[in-house]
Image 1 (cartoon, helix red, strand yellow):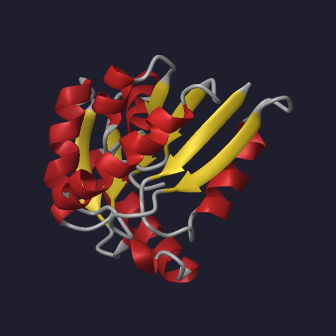
Image 2 (spheres, one colour):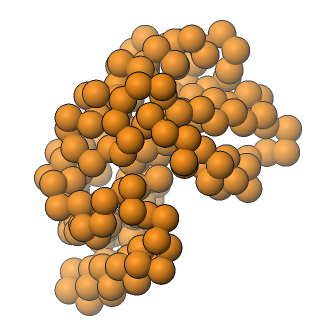
Image 3 (cartoon, helix red, strand yellow):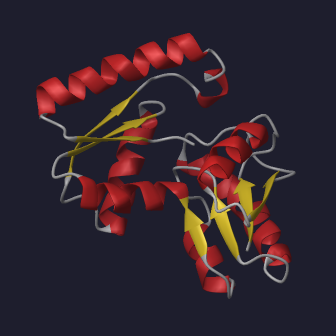
Length: 180
């Protein structure tokens, strides 16, 4: 099986970590290729970023469909997901879509930790579209821009704080990290 992972940002800074993460859970016979788009935003934190990245993502996906058995969009916001599913004849999955749908079978009170504050409403809208909003009880932002996620200590501390808050204040039994 050949899977193409498209990181829908115009930087390769996430490609290696995406490859490592996906390789750990893939079947040993699965061939994984990770690419990023050539033109677009360097991170996805808004509707604008999603729309800006979508054309390049869809072009990359269309150009890959004869060479791959499936496409993974490596962004929790799932930019271009529905258009790619509509256009391609191979499976296309967004990691945000997959995470939210899996969370439905794991827990009864789901919380999402997203990137920055303006992503909160966007994630609520997406959960309604996916049909997962019935179990999502809270979405909180780290308020750390994606491009700053290289500061792992700051990221970990913020995730820990938000997780504890969601568990204590909302009785969350399942946490979803809202970024690749």
